[in-house]
Image 1 (cartoon, rainbow, N blue to C red):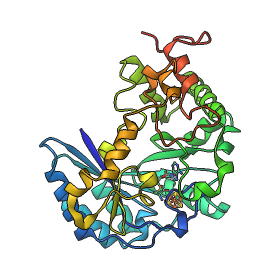
Image 2 (image 1 turned 180 degrees about the horizontal axis):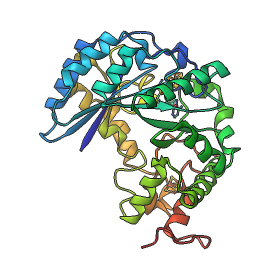
Image 3 (image 1 turned 90 degrees about the horizontal axis):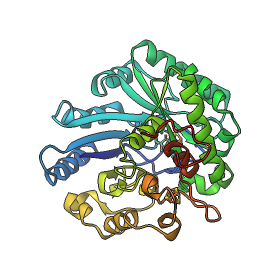
Image 4 (image 1 turned 30 degrees about the vertical axis):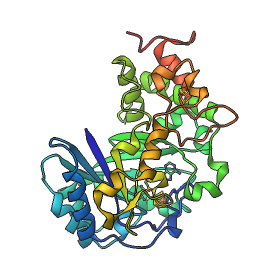
Length: 344
Ligand SMILES: C[S@@+](CC[C@H](N)C(=O)[O-])C[C@H]1O[C@@H](n2cnc3c(N)ncnc32)[C@H](O)[C@@H]1O
Ligand code: SF4
Ligand code: SF4
C-alpha cells in the first residue's frame, strides 16, 4: 500500500498554463513551512500500519520557486527513511543551478518529473527552448526524466507518429498521458478540452503505432493498461477510483486536500488540526463515497468490468464519458476490429 503525499511548496508559478488546476501565476503565493509539513507527515505516518510505503512528491505551483533550503529541510527529515521515496514534478523552465541539480541527484536519486503540454503551456519559443536545454543538461548529468503530457484538443490534431517522434526526440525515459480536469485555469479555457470520443480513438491509434514502432521511450499509461488487461486486474487500483483514500495534497496555505487537481479549491482539513482530522473529515469521506459509486452510464457499460468507472472528475460530454471505452474494447478483444493483441 503506497500513500502519495503531494508536497506543494507554493501554489504559484512562473508560468501560466491554460489548463493549470492551481491557477498558474495567479495561484496562492504562500510558501510552505517545512517544519509544520514535516510534523504533519510524521503524524499521518503514525496513523498507518507498519509496512506502509510513502511517496513524497514535491509539487506546486512550481516547487523550485521556493528557496532550496526549505525543500532541503523537509527532504533531509525523510531522506533514506525505510519505505519513503521522494521526487518532484517541475516545469523546468527556469535556470537550474548547480545546487538544484545536486538536490535532484541526492534526494531523488537522479530522477525528476516534468510536463510537455505543447500548445497550452509555454507562451513563447524562448520558454520552450529553455525547457529543452534544461532537459539536455539534466540528461548529460545522468538524470532520468519522467514526462507527463496533458491531452488537449490541439494534441489530438497530431498523428500518433508525430507524437512518438516528439517524445523520442526529448530523450526522456518514460511518458504518462494525463487527461484534463476542469479546474483552475482550465475553467476559463474550455476550448482546450478534447472531444471525449476523439480522445479515446487517439489513444487507441497511439497504442497501435506504439506496438508497431516499439520506440525507445516507454509510454507508461499504455503499458499499465496492457499489463492490467493481461492479468485481469484492470478495475483494481486503477483509473483514479481510489485516489482519495491514498492521496494527500498539502497546500502551502495550511489546508489539506486529496486529489491534487481540486485541492487548492477544496479542503478536507487544516494542518494544525492534525492527521486524524484529515483522515475522518466529512469532506474526505464524501469524496471517497463518490469514488465508490457509479452512475447508470457506467453501470450499463459493456466495459465496466475493465474500466472500473474511470476518474469521476473527467467531464462527460452529451452522455459520453472521458474514459477509454473503444481502447478497452479493442484491447480486450471485444471489438470486431481487434487484433486480439491482449487476449490470453
Ligand atoms: C500543477 S503542475 C505542478 C508541477 C509543475 N509546475 C508542472 O507543471 O509540472 C502538476 C501537473 O499537473 C498537470 N495539470 C495541470 N492542470 C491540469 C488539469 N486541469 N488537468 C490535468 N492535469 C493538469 C500539469 O500539466 C503537470 O503535469
Ligand atoms: S501546470 Fe505547472 S507549470 Fe503550468 S502554470 Fe501550473 S504549476 Fe505552473
Ligand atoms: S468506459 Fe466510460 S462509461 Fe464505461 S465504465 Fe468506463 S467511464 Fe464508465
